[in-house]
Image 1 (cartoon, rainbow, N blue to C red):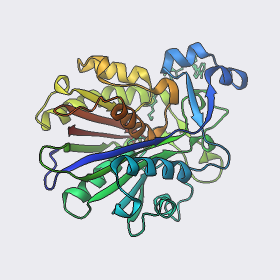
Image 2 (spheres, rainbow, N blue to C red):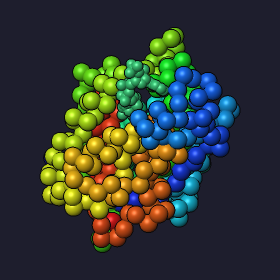
Image 3 (cartoon, rainbow, N blue to C red):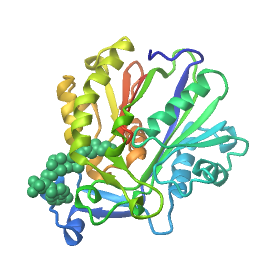
Image 4 (cartoon, rainbow, N blue to C red):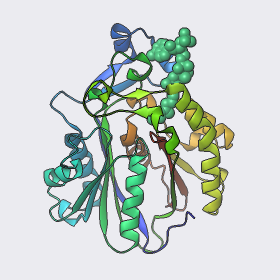
Length: 320
Ligand code: UT7
């Protein structure tokens, strides 16, 4: 089951916020036993941005959220729900979405966080689509924001070079006949693999720990059949999708997925080289850049694909 029924839900605005501070691979060479060549060849990453010391997840989320609302031509008051996907919230209590709701002045809107690894923003989009499609909400603001700087284990070269900070956002609203709409969606989890990517609260285990090779193997074996099944259940085939918005984890993962599904690589717009892996912000940053570049075109199909801690997988199909 993948097809979305009910009132049409579409994307009416997108936004992003990328913090100023840049850390290049050359900067990493000075503090870690690594090389620009290793990072580039194994991941496709050249540089990543990090938030300022006094800049938190909610600060970045609020900026991306306001940009998406402005792009949609909406005021914060028009928002029925603020849904924030993050794995690096300012706090657990209160939820960071409520803080962002207050910061942007979306008075009256409901607010909740989604924590689902790098699949979180796709999951948050699915929650927004569900709320709009069932008639509960008119406009839902979905934000993915991460401040990974503070949870990175800087002594672990196999993970420290991968991640970056940032925020992306989109507004999902009721849409009219003939306008863009979400056609189908699916999320899946393999909880037996929950130990592959972890970060706790307090103590030594609060830092990010990832069994990189195992994650790589899991994603490469599970993602292609997951996407194929999803497309089939959505009444289409991977080759017939015009554009792909994909979680930016590793360029080798994107290339391997596209090769397996026989999709030309120019049907996606990678930005891993500039931002690294921004976890659950990455899908929405990628969406904003695709929209700005005019790659989500009327009459065409766009697929969203995400994967991450849990292990979790997710896909959405959008017809513009
Ligand atoms: O977003 C959530 C989902 N996350 C992912 O999808 C991440 C999936 N995993 C990956 O992207 C890759 O596994 C990594 C990029 C994390 C690692 O790449 P790899 O090709 O799997 O490398 P590896 O772990 O097999 O390590 C190969 C070698 C090792 O050295 P030896 O044992 O062969 O001597 C590592 O110690 O590379 C070494 N290495 C490094 N060398 C230089 C590991 N990290 C580094 C580094 N610089 N930063």
